[in-house]
Length: 213
Ligand code: SF4
Image (cartoon, rainbow, N blue to C red; front, side, top):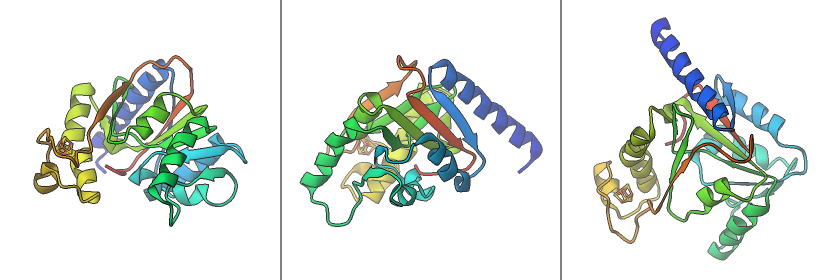
């Protein structure tokens, strides 16, 4: 990468991390996805009850695989053969976990997390319940402000998820949001995480790569 571009990106990452800390969240940076598991393992104690929100980033970085090694008490929503009822039970039990892991749809340079959910189980657990929340995100998720975060979800995250889940929505066909009223709509709850009351409950690991949607 060109050194000047690298310098711009480094400054953007630093600004974002500084503002996450000002908003009472912890912020870490790792160069690449190979280093994510090591950082996560530092933040979760052996035997902890853990659960995850729906996230491609957690698969891409090997976190899901790591949580299955037997070191933790993992409520695995992705386990083969689970019925819808059993998955929903895991969603509810997730509120009582020691650590909840997820990604985020966008991070603003002002240190905010922006997320749009269909079920709402992911944002609900991020907001309240788990003692600790670890957010893993590639630097492709950084945007200037909430307006850009909204646009990122409308133009990238939601259409990509809609395509992945094979939803019958306009964005599956066009690749951008038409603010649909279809039964398959995946955008139902919109959240902005600003300054947190419980200091350091949310820990953000920024990864110097493009990850997830
Ligand atoms: S509101 Fe509908 S069209 Fe817009 S991104 Fe969500 S699912 Fe797609």
